[in-house]
Image (cartoon, rainbow, N blue to C red):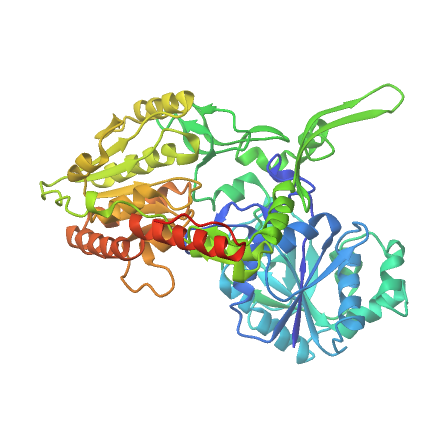
Length: 620
């Protein structure tokens, strides 16, 4: 058995204002997985750990402030050890090892491997725990480190200097902490490796060291006396005092995504939030806007612009590693926005007065909706939903599964079923039946179509619908002008049945939906769809359990312009695929989503309710 301890700490001030003491960098969902879904560093690491071919158990050592974030993002079996106070990595590792020995029943001879929870690395990095375990169990050294083969002379990392430059593991002769550029070059020439903060040892080795500082009869006693442990890093308190140290070299991707410069290298999206970036005057610029206010960025190069409730940062990427001191001089000492178990809050005003008194004004969103839901579910006779995943959510929120009933929307199928397919005229026409409103995310649609048009010139986009939000509508039109998008038509309100004859397929880019009628109508007319992963769109396009009609379109994550452009390109490049998908979709609608079926289902529900409560029933 290998016991993996993941260290989760830090306030992420180098990624201010996106990260803070309650939302550390490892929990920011800024990366994407292989499916294009947003994931955090923690979620990415756990996915890689679960792919390791070894008998592992996982313990996360963290502070109470991060407990909610970890439990919200990480599912499965793991132990969580909470520090009573932050005292650096040495006491945190000692606490976790004491928990392994006294609470989890780990054997003193078992291998323990300590890793940061937020490393950005290849799968081979995590597979390397097997080699570390072998080195520890062979007795090669009391303490074995993982060393990364350097790719450049970094001044940001410490170096491990082994006695040999070949083989694995290797004896360690000394350490050098963050050298200057010339010294780093010399170290690399000697075969030095980057210290990535990964340590392996037998459990008994570390508990013996802990006993030298604090001997206790139980884990609870150890934790209650936590302040007696030295407030120091594991490198300084343990590693540099060890007499028997080895290192296993690792050659592959490894990064500390702790600065905006390194983080933006791995970001797929260059802009997030309510943002317009002038592509003609900006290059290598990343922008994140969480405020909801409009933001325009122009004339910048090699920069990052971030706006949150905690503050605003405009910084050159190379200079981003040095902002910690500047942030400390201006930023609030508490987060201005935070999610808690009971809900979330935003600080409206924070003031200090002579004499030391302070005032704080918060705007809170309590989980009142969930409390109402629980009580409503308890009292309800039946609870309906439009689709299977919504029913699952109701059950997860506490509703009795026997009360839950799926009654999908239905459309007037006959209006759409005989609409002829558009003749092949060399152009591909894409339709979007949508209101101009932020929730429909028309801006991502425009950006994605702009990218698609660069790849395939003979495509047209028809945006059909009225304007719900005048300001947002004006921003959408301005974005088209700014980008110079060609072959994009805002039609205004139209007769969708008549206009459908002009279209090859349709798209939907909403960030929130239930069971969109526009998708059902498109499929009824044998037009396949590209949609975002919202509501029941995946069920509509790929089928619910028991539905074997086949795939009738493509699904992409919300606000993912490249994924949307890629999916539209796949649909554009094969007329045969579009026809086949359209026919599948029409058969699905004809079977499950008819207006008459919907009415019959509701009548049956009302009859059942009337019978159960002895209510009069209206005769048809």
